[in-house]
Length: 391
Image 1 (cartoon, rainbow, N blue to C red):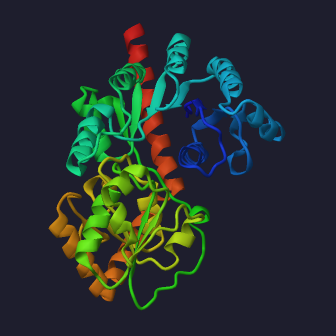
Image 2 (tube, rainbow, N blue to C red):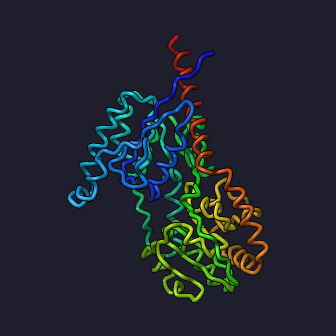
Image 3 (cartoon, one colour):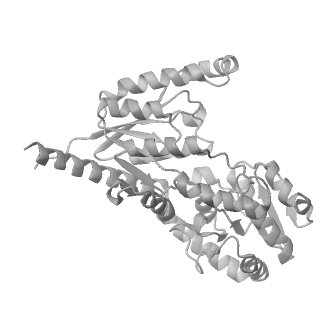
């Protein structure tokens, strides 16, 4: 009986790795759980501290040097340069390279020059899809577009994805955005993100007499925060809306006066996640453009009912079971759902329990195993095709 050799993956993340901030946490969690039978992995980063230090993480500079180094080089240019050089060396022994979308284009070219197959993490929808969604959002809000996606960054993204052999797509809408750009379906590997008990914490939930609705994330137009505030103030329910996260000036320009509503609380960023969910029963998240939201998964795992958009739901949140999945611009539907959930404790409890049960299908070990299976299948299929062409 013959066994396939282990496929070695060299991964690259051009960000400081603390295992806590979104991309750092996601990349470390992906790599930790994607490694397994038939696949080994190492993750190259400029620097790593605390939760970002794992046996598979290869930091360009040692942890003890980080504090003084980043005071001297705030942008971390030398660390990124050193990380890139070490990654080039790692490519010599790699079977597959794995890059996050934010990686500089020069690193993509390094991978192609080395002749190593490349898989890319597509965190959000393709920018060709994102731009019109966000332009429409700012137009409706009546303020100048501030999404920051330029024509040149769109073209750069197209060049990067053209170099990819495979692309990890974390939701059906991300997959569709790639198909709309003419990317072949066989190059798209459907996957998901995950959650862990360690991340969401173990703080007991304290359900009060009045329901608490929760929004967590960057409080911005892209996440639909202004739409939630408008729907909440119109619904005028007996309850509280906690908006946890940094509030961007664009939101204050649109709904600043409504943020002072007596039923709205804005405590800023809250950590750990369990502190935000401690009193909440419903996670309200009308995001307009997304990949696969970690906050949605963590809210479900915490037992919160969901009130979200198709972008926030992906193929995870089930309408009518785990919560309500609504068009973010359908104000009457959101007002009605807010009132229904606020007035019906049994409905909140039933949907929250359903959401918690559903989340068990998306733990990091399951998400990692799915990625490993899909990548190994794609890699071995490509190798078999190469052998056949070589005959």
